[in-house]
Image (tube, rainbow, N blue to C red; front, side, top):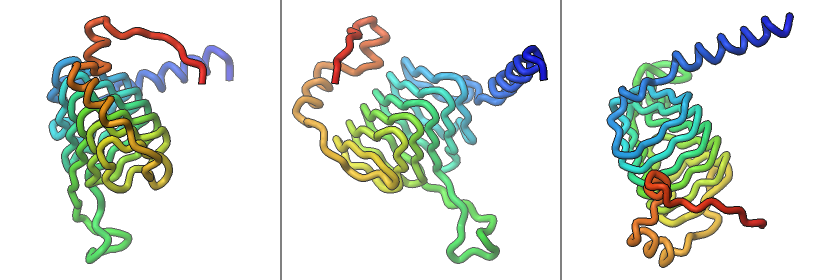
Length: 189
């Protein structure tokens, strides 16, 4: 295969991917909601966005059961959120039957979710929580918790006093970024 035909094949794949994105006009968006390319939502009318939200590239929102994303949420790339599942217990067929079990997902204010995270139906992620990259969230996450792993477990808790001070001062990242007040700098760790 020639270089030109490989490049053409790659371009066609990208065009097909873009064509399959869920149009942003399908969502009810709050103020300052930034959604990177590649979002796919099964029921975009059942996704509820607050204000000052960022969702990274290639998000999969299986939102049949309802998805509620509160203000100030930052979500990394390649997120998968599921709000529905098949019935296997008491099912009339195997491995499952035609029933769909709907369980909404709630992501509360100022949550940061890293890349490649999976969230299963019925989960609530509490205010100010942080979900580490690659985590599989199978249970509710308490407010201010930092979680990671598969299944996600609490690693530590955030400093709630500092969090509340920043919240009171409206120091919400996407709000600051929109107004050009974010200061970028590096810290060696």
